[in-house]
Length: 413
Image (cartoon, rainbow, N blue to C red; front, top):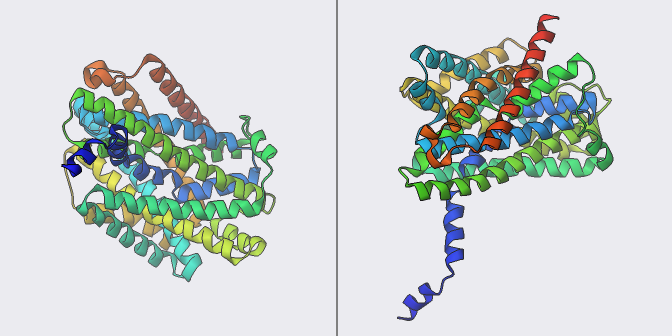
C-alpha cells in the first residue's frame, strides 16, 4: 500500500522528462558527421590562412545544418519513410536512380574523408603507415556498427562518447591559445579575400552541411519509433527539436573552436596540412596538446566512418529497395579511400577536395527535402509553416550560389 502510494506521488513532470530523454539520440549520431576529419582540414586551412575571416561561414553553415536536420527528422516522423524512400515514391524511376547515383558518389567522398582522417591520426599517434591506418579505421568503424545489433542506445552512447573526446581536446587547446574575443566577433561579418577563400568557404560548407547526414537522420527517426498516432508524432517532434538543437549546437561549437585554434595559434605560419598543424601545436603548446589533437582526430575518423557506412545503407535501401551486407557496403566505399592513400596523394588536400565534392551533393538532398516537407498530403499536421519553407529555400539558394561560384572559379582556372 505504501509503495503504491509512493508511486502515485511521483511528479508527472519528472516522468515526462525521463520519457523525453529516452527519445533523444538520433541527432547526436548525425552530429558526428559535422565534426568529421573533413572539418579538421577545412577549418584548420581557414584559420591558418585567413585568421578569423571565415568565422561567419562556420556560424552560417551550422544554422543551416540545424534547420535541415530538423526537417529531415520531421520528414521521417511524419511519413514513416526515409528521404531516399520518399524520393523513390514521389519521383520517376529515372530521377530516383540519378539521385541514387550521385548519393553513392557523395558516400565515396564521405568515406574518403573519414578513412583518410583516421589514417592520419593513427600515423601521428603510432607511426602506422597510412594505408594500414585506413584499414584499421574501417575495421574499427565496422565494429562500432556491430553495437546496433544490441539496440539503438549502445551505438548512440559510443558516438556520443567520441563527441566527448573531440570536445575535450578542442576546449583544452583553445584555452591555451587565448584567442581575442573581438577578433572572433569581427569574423562574423560576411566577406571573402580572393578566389581561394571562396573555394575554401565552399569546402567548409560541404564539410558542415553533410548530404549523407540529411539522408540518415530521416532514416533514424523512421526505424526507431515505429507506427505513431498524430498526437504521438507531435510530441516526438518536440523532443527531436531539442535533440537537434543540442547536438547541432555542440557540433557547431566544435567547428568554431577548431577554426579559432588555427587562427589564434597557427595563423601566419604557412601551415596547410593536418600533420604540420599537429607538429606546430606540439612545438608551440607542448606534446600533451598535440596528443589531444591527434586523439580528437582519431575519434572523429572512427565515429564518422561508422555513421557514413550506416548512411550509405539508408541510401541504398531507400532509393533501390535493396539491402546488402554491411561488410560489402564497407568494402565498396573503402576501396577508393585506400587507393588515394596508396597513390601517395597529399592526405589533407584529399580531405579538402572531398568536402568540395560533398558541397555539390547538398542541393540534391536539400531540394527534395524542402519539397516534401511543405506538402500537406505527405506531412499531414507536421507540414512546414510558410516561414520555415521560406528560410529553408533561402538556405538552399545560398548553397547553390556558392556551388555555382565554385564551378566558375574551377573552370576559370
